[in-house]
Amino acid sequence: MTETDSDGAGSGRPSNYRHPGSHEADLRRVGANPDFWYPVALSGDVRGGRVCATAFAGERIALYRGASGGVYALEDRCAHRQVPLSMGVVQGETLRCCYHAWAYRGDGRISQIPYLSKGDARPPRGVRGYPVREAYGLVFVFPGDPEKAAVTALPELPAFGSPKYRTMAFSRTVRCHYSFMHENLLDMNHQFLHRGVVGRLHPELLEYRTDARSVEATYLFTHAGGKRNRSAGLLASQGIGGSASRDVMTIRTAYPYQTLDLVPENADHPAFCLWAAYVPEDAEQRTCHAYGLLMIQKPRVPGALHLVWPFIRRFTERVFAEDRMAVEAEQRAWEEQGEDRNHEVFPLILDLREVLRANGVPLTPGGAADTTALDPTASDDRTGPAPGHSASPAGPGRSCP
View (spheres, rainbow, N blue to C red):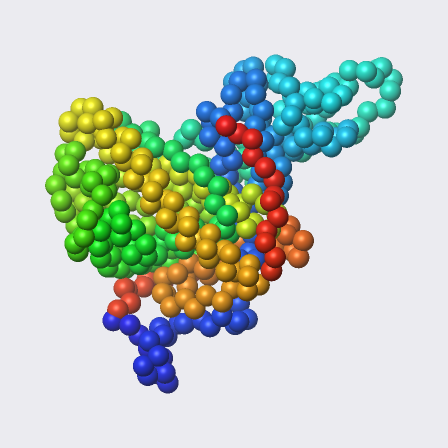
């Protein structure tokens, strides 16, 4: 049942409706908090002896894998003439600039300037080195305060290493602010968008919970008719070991990551689990790179998942393409209007926006994140029942395969 304002009979607005133009900060001008581990490449794309150009929020980063197999992340510019180090050459554990052959260690310090004598003056340090870790087939960097890296945990993905699941990885650029991606996945009322592949799905919000750093929603999904792509059933373990059923879906934004678990009715374990991160690429954060790990439960029939794997990937790619079309259209509208004019009425998404605002950092007029505005918020746990502008510049490029 939908709540309405006591003085607005017939308006259909929930009691916590926020009108655009209120005093709240425009969420699309809030940057991602850099004090977390962010994926910036697939591990397989950072090959031995090769350099990969990537970025976080306008900061260009060069990744390279040394002879020992470890990955290093350096500011993507040579301290000499500012030529990108991603154009350089890997030699052992060092990265050598392609221009004058200045060599850098994995921490960014200069190890050699080949044409200088021992007594000649040298630059004081070199370039910035980023904390870097590999996990789950991804390369993570810590773009914020390096002293916080050691005490900040990587996300936990228990299904990733489980023999019961097989993982499908995704890596795609999406031309929108990262917040649109969080809203898209958490708000399952957009299933009309996917009617051509999933038929008529009816999502019922059972409950949601929110606190200072997270929002979690639980939906019950039933198929209400229409043609359903066969791969949708395969992904939910129907036809490869299960039967048609209603599904319970739990989606959680635990800043800055997002997860989704789908459990068929009467099942003990999720048919699949999704983990996603949306990494801003340009300084104005109007483009993000979406990394996803889809962990699919193996069926009882050995080898069956291998046979249907291409069909599941094709289905998921099609759904993602439709979502990308929608969120990029939202971003274009924001740029044309110069502000956020959304008339959001879903309390779940209103609470999500508060979480993203509170944990993000304001963007300066030039697009840089203002990290001085970081504000640790106290936990405030709430339970909610189901309620009845010019275009962005191109930004840093990516040269990972």
